[in-house]
Image (cartoon, rainbow, N blue to C red; front, side, top):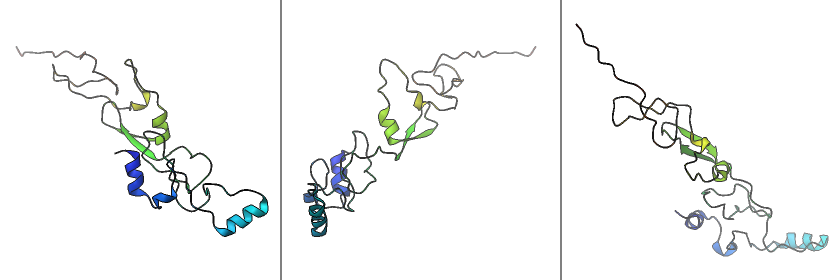
Length: 154
């Protein structure tokens, strides 16, 4: 689901009061205009201080809303929890959304160290009855190092 459709579904404000970049364009009230004129500060084109929720789009990949009400400055990083599966798929790891978005893309066979848990892999080998004894890892399992020993009674 794309961000814009989520934004419109969850919007609590009239779409006519929001710029394409999500900035609020609600008109300042008369009291604020009088205070602004008395101080010599021109009223802003976006209110930046109303109680409506911030509607600015988040960075690509973030599905959360800004936790601040309408504001002038840049939105803070998103610290909402995001759960991702480790390589061996036994553990759900929880990170802040901004951490996950800051990970460099893993290319050329490099492994993302943040997706490794402390468990043993335990995936089954296709050619023997044993399970992988390596710690959580990406890619295919290393070859089985165990050998079955058949003992016969005499």
